[in-house]
Image (tube, rainbow, N blue to C red; front, side):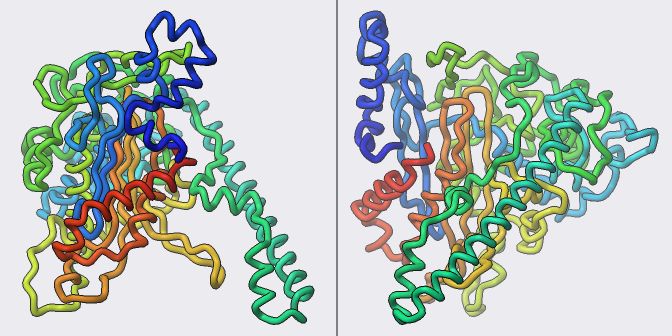
Length: 510
């Protein structure tokens, strides 16, 4: 989102498409100018933001349906892809709290038909806890064990080189600071501070500030595998296990991280048996409890009002409808539809559950959270040996990515604690991000949770990176301490100013 094109983005990205049309004159003559305008950039995107549990901004930009010129709005329903994992984690945690599911029991306790596994001729155990943190060893879409292991070795080497480079840059930076301090010591404290502020940043600083310190080489994109486009409808979650149940493990369970949507299909089978209820019926009950009326399985047959169409760019760079796929093979790991408003409610329900126990004012009665605070504490704790592809400074927990708070030097960069999950599906990209903060000071009613910013972004275009954009938006809204009074929360002009400022500050990320 270029700030120069902010207004054009809201009305169809006219100026952006003009450049495209000028460089391809045949497009205008063959398609007409209005069609070219609609086929440049992301067809549509919907953004939602809440602060301290109150929705303060929700807006759709572009088209939910390009062909029929249906505009996006906050009620537009899109694929949420792997954010489904965070929803499934909530269902798993609820069963664990009820004593119906053991995180550390072998999956065969619940799904005995799933084959016992071996790694290097040694019997191994896969547990629910391992699946939740992508440590099970079950493959993702790549079937070649040697290829996966070779890539993992490359990743490790590059991460080491990256850390070494950062340490070297930090050493150079400290040396330069020392020299600067010696040079300017005669000028007094004010002059010293001024020169330090003007010192140029290193490349590693720029990478850190952008939230994209991700130099690790990745394997092929999911969209390059045939399994990403499965059209077969599976009768139930147990049938979909046939896709991978007899394949060898990529590594010994618990020893390495490998993001695997197939493993979450096994998790859905565990959940169904533990709950003694159909997985989709269980999830629908969860959506009802969490007040998420527009969150439903991504099924082709039902009429789903406000459902967007999904798009991809072909090899020639033209916007086309994405191919038909059936998501019944991956309900738990990426098979649901939702809206930004439903996802905001979910994020706030999780924040409330985590923060309600920390209330200082015990004179007021507050309802319990959907999950216990200790349960959220466990789910959101970084797990050893895990990685986070969308932010290398973080780790994977259980169905969530976690970036811990950290500050190495006084008056220098402070990395904020936040949680998020991104998603990528056929014709769709998504992110849900939670930026918690401490209990605000002020009126007693301001002390009730949730405290923090929740950002949800849905896009009906494949392969769009949204995490850094969501994080920048969250930081913009976090700057304003919102007091929960009608005079503030109903001020639409203030909300509009914040929304425009957030868009301007995220121009380099979209």
